[in-house]
Length: 258
Image 1 (cartoon, one colour):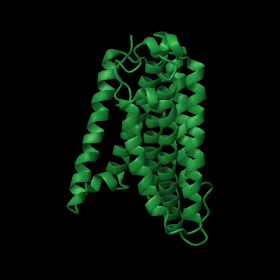
Image 2 (cartoon, one colour):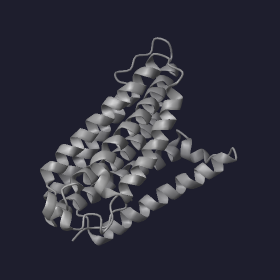
Image 3 (spheres, one colour):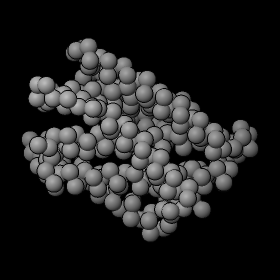
Image 4 (cartoon, one colour):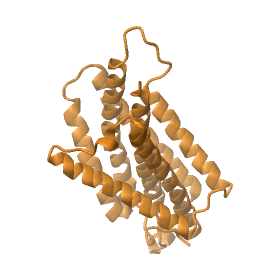
């Protein structure tokens, strides 16, 4: 039975079988994996563009990042409500999201090295560590899921959904407060409280991967339409991008400690 996910991309009826499945084929696990790889590579290539722009001191990168963020959000919404378009909209989303992620990553990296004392040496930058940790967590969650060490039961699903909702409510309140020039100090602090909150959010994002794996596996078993391979890959990318951003923030906070 298809589990309900806290990822807004997935819902109970998302992968429901339809006449399209018999006309165009059905969703397969290998097909979803292949399309996930395509979307991931698209994000990486797109991110390299704004990353290089920051490295070269291009002043227009900020505008390109905002365009990527806004159009990425719009494309994501279109994909969610028009799942049958996902073969086109999912790659477009990956392009826009990459433009945003590349710029954010480059600016965080630049700020990190600018804060280092002259002569200080570091083995790796923030972005490298965040990327490595993100993929490490992804593989760990996949391993835990495949070996049934973590099972997406109904209680697990409700707990992750509630925690995810609380996180986005926290960010929404912080965004509204930011419009009035006020921020939650503990949310941006590199002290124990700020790092602890960031670590908890990383865990919540990681647990969402378990539900995504379950939804995709159930959809394949139910014979969802072929185009849902793109939609399943898209949903997985949404969670993976969130996990990376939270991991980037956590690594930045840890690196900023004295």
